Image (tube, rainbow, N blue to C red; front, top):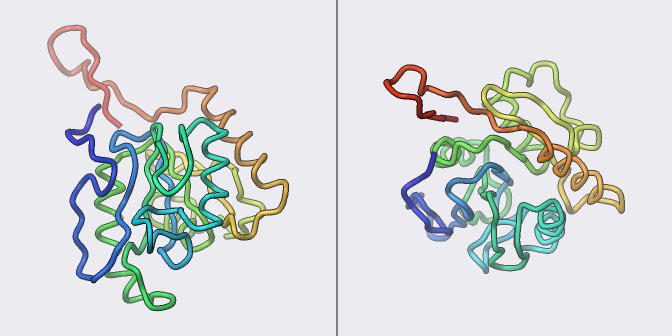
Length: 208
């Protein structure tokens, strides 16, 4: 499957009703979708790109070592990965629950348009949101990020690998995440169905 856009920043033209926002960034055909909280936590107020503050660059370094980025920095060179936030607007402090709820439709539309095979929620809020809305595992999963970091959770059509907030990493978290992502990529992790069997001819028609 291929999307019709090759734009890296805001490929689907999201326009929330706020003065400043940090849109999704990356490969619109991504296999890996990295989900952050909001710009005040994971950066982008200046660069316009998610995960570009100090903890975000720390995360980028791990993703690069795992083969999901070709370069790191304020405009990382992505490879089959996409970054976005639950709340893309630049807020004055922490957004309220009502503000998160208002932004949820933008995040959900972007997530479904990307249709990645693997979701990488970063931090407790993003992990809780992904598990609650895109898996059937929330009811039996304690949001304990130390235990969940880099561990596989199977969702409804997605694989989920929670990531502890990089602002809280010690010397072990980088390697644990890299090792998990490299091991995952050594397997046939893509969640696809071949609908070609319902059509004339022998050509496969793969959908996520």
